[in-house]
Length: 504
Figure 1 (cartoon, rainbow, N blue to C red):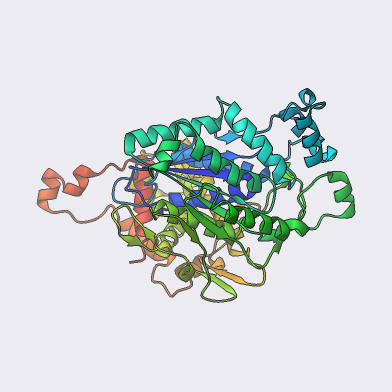
Figure 2 (cartoon, one colour; figure 1 turned 180 degrees about the horizontal axis):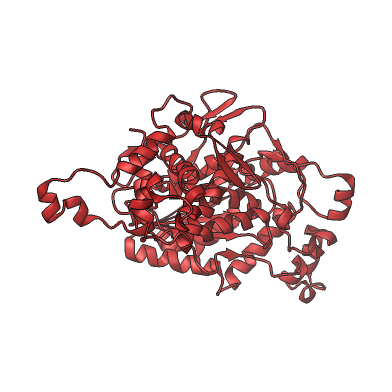
């Protein structure tokens, strides 16, 4: 089964960031290694800080995801497919709307006069390097034209991959995410879904239900307040004063068009619009922190991938007015119709990441160069010494990913303003300068419960992992588990550490 995710604009990139972590934690519904998550991004703002951060995360994961962690584990069970190019910009560098539609050829014709009446001169001539500036009418025109013209682009590579997947596996599921209140997402969500559904190579498969298209449409959940000087210098820009008006118009459009090409739609927003500390039109400065809304939207993608059939419009509510908690999230239905708890998988994964950063990473350099005795750390003697190069690319990229995960988690946990997010207890960790610090005394309270898994228990389990007593038969012939095992090297260690972080 192929799962396809398209992030549209900066908000979509942040949803992709959250979905990536859910994927690594094993919350995709596929059987291990028998499904993949194919991701791509659409944004004219090639320097968008949100997309840059997500791209760094994806590249990092892509470089270590092939470590052999073995069978029967949620960890890394869904391979990530990161195509090249992964990014599609519908607008070329230093171009504007006039150039995209070749206005000079039509300026004296009736169609040119109509065009002039629909767009102001500033809208037509603003350079689009930093996005569509909160003008979905510009974005829709550009995307509708360029998606059909850029035959060598990431967008057409996506169509080829979907077509191949349907021919091989019989089906494919495509999910889009972006905002409906800004520029790029508001333009791209209806336009791209329609183009995919009407594509001559995919149209029949869509009609037969072999291709399903879902979308997370993000409603307003943040705001920003530019100064008078910033307004003057920025020219056209998305204004949070218009977010609710834009949203109302977008929702009316989806209502009037019967969903505009979507099989399932998820509307995710927040009644409290969190103020952004820094205003930015786009580019590298548009680097908003992760938000609980992004997490919910990523869970919407997982819910869609679980195969819920038919035309649906979903919404979600909270059990408590001022708190976001595990009870608010649906279970995940796996490939064999079993339901798994998001809380169980995600908490164990978080425990695994934090345990690595606290137990393993700080002492690895000294253990490798002999400055610290190996006998003081049994896990190093059993799994690392003379087996794993501490400077191997897999190790470095995993550690970079782990640090990024904690930074993302810290942002999510502090994204609700005066309300609280109670998924992972922030007393267990903190971040400073994008570096994670673990507070082991609070380890057992990770999911706000009185758990039995403290940091010393994880150490003890890890030390016992290779010392299980074996029967005479196993010593001679090997156990069934041993003969089917595919763990090796760094992957073997990660598997043992992950298993040591289980709740029971």
